[in-house]
Image 1 (cartoon, rainbow, N blue to C red):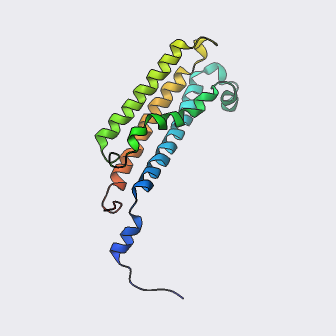
Image 2 (cartoon, helix red, strand yellow; image 1 turned 180 degrees about the vertical axis):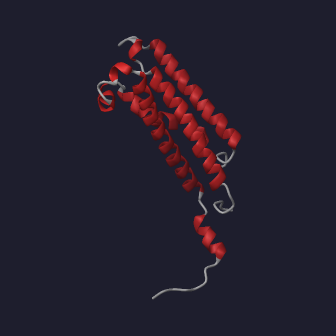
Length: 161
C-alpha cells in the first residue's frame, strides 16, 4: 500500500543533518580518496619522468621502481593532517589552508631528512619526483575537497543544533 501522507520539511532536512562523528568520518573518507588520486597521479608523473623505464610499461614500473613505503604515503598524509579533523575547525578555510601547508611542509621536511640520512642503496634511487608530485597533488586535491566540504556541508541544512 502506498503511503501518501504529507512530509514535514523540517523533518526531511533533519535526516540530512550530520553528527560530529559522521562529519569526522566524511572528512577522513574524502581526504583518503583525495590522497589516493594524488598517489596515482604522482606515480604517473614519476613514471613519465623516467624515460628509460617507459619501454617496460607502467605495470613493470609499479612492480620494480617505487619502494614499498611510497604506497603508504596516503596514510602518512592523513596522519600529518590530524589537526584538521576537528569538526569545529573543519569549516574554517584559513585553518584548512594553514593545516594543509603545514602537513606539506612537515612531509617534505621528513623526506629531506631521510634523503640526507639514506645511504644504502644510493640516493639516486629515492623517489624525489614521486614525493614532490604526491605532495603537490595531495595538497591540491585535499584543498579542493575541503573547499567542497566547507561549501556544502557547513550549510544550515547539514548542521545539527
